[in-house]
Length: 242
Length: 242
Image (cartoon, rainbow over all chains, first blue to last red; front, side):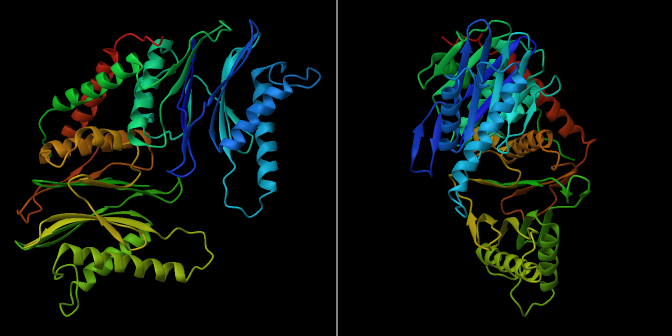
């Protein structure tokens, strides 16, 4: 499993991904699920992936390889974020068709989900969720975030806290708390985390970090949040049902 | 969908069920999912149900009807909670086999999950989760609660707060907060709630209540919890990722 969340806010984008992959509970490993395509001062694209690892790795490899051929439309020369999302959708369909075509009747799930967030000069900040079918939806003011993978444990806190105008630092705190709840409840989601804040119009990936078990801030808010929850639970008014 | 949670604690049992059923999003209605079989001073059985409503209603109807025949083993004369769980498992299998047998190849999901908690004189407090296959597991000191239906949204708070020795009133608060998080996140879970506290050795169902939208205590802790979350979120230390 996997948990990735991306937020498209008035002042920028926020991304948090775990890195655990598993094929059964006895085959667990660590793979990065946050991928960056960057063209200085012109475009910043962040792709997060969930699903079949062979599928998502192939997609990222093909996207990279095709950037070497400027004659062909690729993620580094596509005119808009919408065009990049379309390209991703096509690549999803291509890889899934290739791998599942050779395995008709197999029970293997070759599907994947992608989140694509970023900015291309002349286009605003945009965030898309690309489905296994290759079609996609876009985040809006009303629904400024998407999740892929194990989304349920970490959804309540986002729904309570996040709005389109939440500042980027607070949004990252919210995403980290959401991830912390998920890490506690689902063994198939695991550290380290890959996180990134993208301030609008910066075309920069400097605010990218890896959070491991010894990361002092993550440990601190994880502990602080847990203690805070217990404290407000302890302050609930005495039960009165009748 | 449905959300039911039951807790088996050192001092008694706690049950909370929602009452929403839906066949598609455009066919929503209210059905009680908490059912009581009571023999004064001798046994108290509480059954919560999730899944196909035709299946769960048939199961409850058959259990009731068979109580009229004292020659036959039924939930009011079975010797132990384990025997009651076995009877429930058999009835689950019987109804699912009957309804799905006549509909071979249909895509309808006839399955259901049941929680059975209670006490029979001479037997301790016990809590079982009966699967659609009719087999079942029992709650223990290590895992003192079970959930059926839409369990994920409301699981983190239970995992943080509940232990085997949590007092019944606190456990009910925890179950109500867990339900509140679920109600907010999943439209297919809805009020009113049927809740019950069963103190060990009481053989009484007096602490049974229905919680509607206008229930003052539920409204108060729902609001208090939401405000408390926002307040501890606001007190998190400033973001420091590097």
